[in-house]
Length: 394
Ligand SMILES: Cc1cc2nc3c(=O)[nH]c(=O)nc-3n(C[C@H](O)[C@H](O)[C@H](O)COP(=O)(O)OP(=O)(O)OC[C@H]3O[C@@H](n4cnc5c(N)ncnc54)[C@H](O)[C@@H]3O)c2cc1C
Image (cartoon, rainbow, N blue to C red):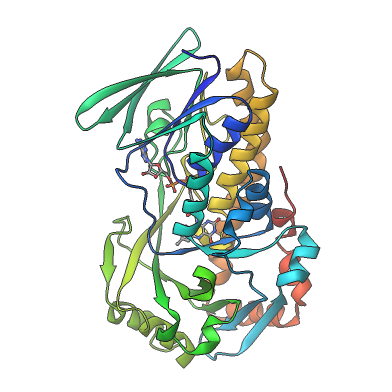
């Protein structure tokens, strides 16, 4: 076995990013991904300043130039009346304020950029169609067993990083680290061509429509050639995954009393994809054990309301790369340092995402009080509420 080899389970945003970070730190990296082909659900992702700073650190930001959109404004809109509750200037203003750009992008474009960077790295071996099933640790070496078309493959390394998502097998095999918690909400997602919506939706603006028990987010992606839509509703069905399609009529009921602009969004896609929302309770102790650790959703899946899940996976990747670069022979000790460097921050973001769930979906007098506060808030103050998230850098 070559010196300092690492296995990464999962080639999502977190897995690809940490492969890059570890390779740059001098490690030989094997990425094992369950999917036979890497494809992303047709959906967008917001990249706040902390995320783009990480992508810059990983040398990937420049690869996003032609596909990402830099929003010029962020608007909070009353979903029922259509009235503007608050607005912040983004673009250059936000970049100056937080020291890095805010971008919105189609997930497939982000994944393609990460993948291209991975392929340019000769010390990364990405193997598709491999499902990590077990691992065993002996004398500081971890042996990873992966199922490949019914055969078992064995990979030996100095460390295993479980970047295998919210239903992580690596977390499960570590034991005692919690299970996904169903939050009784569904995220409905669709990406539509710009012709399907009135021209104003193609403006470089992130719009957040708030209403009791539901909200909608829209922003342009694909260099402005498409619009990404997300609708959040209360939903008791815990079935998860992107494969669950639904016609717009199924979504019409929760938004029946909303403003025409919101209903236009709901009616635009031919088909929505539904995703039941789960998160993890914050882990109060180290994520890993010995030469095994976790990263991204596997460690700290969070509700998507602050658009920070992928951003926190990117932060993890940078910090783990830096920590591995500093490591001596004791890689297990370096993994504990990485976990301690990340634990407090991701716990705070996970909790803030749960708080955002409550605030976004208020009804009755509490909703009116929230709206009064929002109307009084300047654009700068609106963004500064999460300045502690956006100013982070590796
Ligand atoms: C509605 C919604 C909107 C969101 N919007 C944003 C946003 O705007 N901004 C943002 O930053 N975040 C957002 N997120 C969160 C973000 O999508 C996730 O946090 C992020 O994708 C997690 O990345 P990951 O690499 O940790 O996990 P995943 O993306 O889940 O990747 C895990 C990978 O591991 C593979 N895998 C699983 N099990 C195994 C196994 N046993 N062996 C091998 N491979 C395996 C999977 O196939 C997958 O490729 C949103 C989430 C949702 C639901």
